Image (cartoon, rainbow, N blue to C red; front, side, top):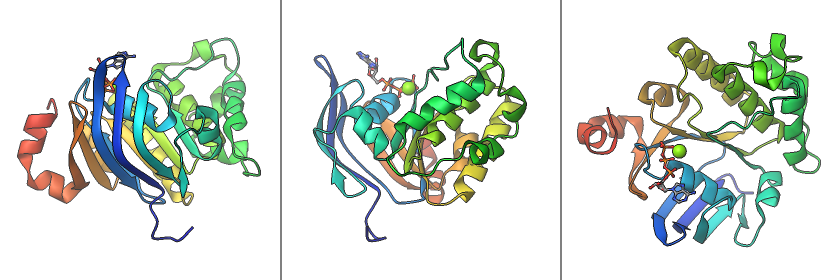
Length: 239
Ligand SMILES: Nc1ncnc2c1ncn2[C@@H]1O[C@H](COP(=O)(O)OP(=O)(O)OP(=O)(O)O)[C@@H](O)[C@H]1O
Ligand SMILES: [Mg+2]
């Protein structure tokens, strides 16, 4: 793949739940290794857009190119094996198996031939190491989120979609997750798309902002450009 090609290129994306037209003509690009924030208030369409990329929920039309492949007609699990991995907002930690087993489940999503080393992934999350033999139900919300992200990484993603990874977490835990994401970003080519409402966190872990409102992308640009227009925050974010 030429390095000038975006990793993800979305054009004319529409998504529907039954008769409700949720995502409206969205366009989006993510470059290899880039980290992009997807901002928008409750109900703006962040989760629907992420699920649309995986064909995991809404009915979707439009063009999604990922790593040079058109995804129309490609099943959700095949998209994941191709390197498009979603950590959903509800985390989905299995309560009755251990943390290590929960994380290992992510390996099934890995593309054939991908090298995934659980020890390297544990190294990214120092807080998880002492918890590996605990059961899923014995974790706090922040610990569950770390497990969900670690499990996502076991799928050897090229683009990791994180849906509100710090929602409801205490500031000290948000801080830890920001550090962990920083370590993940240093490991190489992995690109991130992070749905968020926490502006401070999003700013720390991303390079660029995509703002969505009522299913439409209303801004796409760098943090400097975002900050230069304070109306964006007032109109489109509940801050
Ligand atoms: N399964 C569903 N069936 C029908 N409508 C849905 C479904 N999921 C979401 N919606 C609707 O789609 C719109 C976008 O919701 P979505 O969950 O994508 O928003 P969001 O930006 O992720 O919000 P939040 O920050 O609260 O997670 C909302 O109007 C919501 O009510
Ligand atoms: Mg959501």
